[in-house]
Length: 150
Image (cartoon, rainbow, N blue to C red):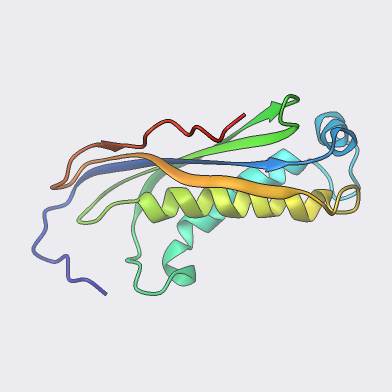
C-alpha cells in the first residue's frame, strides 16, 4: 500500500464508462423488463454502487475510502445493440476514486451479463475505462475520445 498520510484530504472525483453488447432480442427483454431475474438495470445499478463501496476489499493495496457519492447510469443503445454504463464516484480524501468508478462500471456490466445470460450467452463487455478524474496534486485528467466506440 502506498503511504498517503502526508497528503491533504481534497475533493476527488472520477468518472468511468463501459458497454455490454447483447442481442437485439435480449436488449428488448431488458427494455421491457421481462427477464426472470427481474429489473436488470435497477439490480445492476445497486451492484455497481455496492462494488464501488467495496473496491478496497476487491483490489489488493487499494485504500478504503469514505465515498461521498456514487452514481451509476445506463443508456440503452439500439445501435450497439446493448447497454452503455457510466459511473461517477466522489470523496474527500488523500487519494483518488478512479478505481471505485471503474469497479462500479465493471461490476454493473457483469451483473447485466448475469441477469441476461438465459437469453444471450454471447454478450461482450467492452471499453471499460476511466473518462476523467479531478482533485489531488495532479489535478484534472481527461481521456482522449474512444475511436473504437460505435
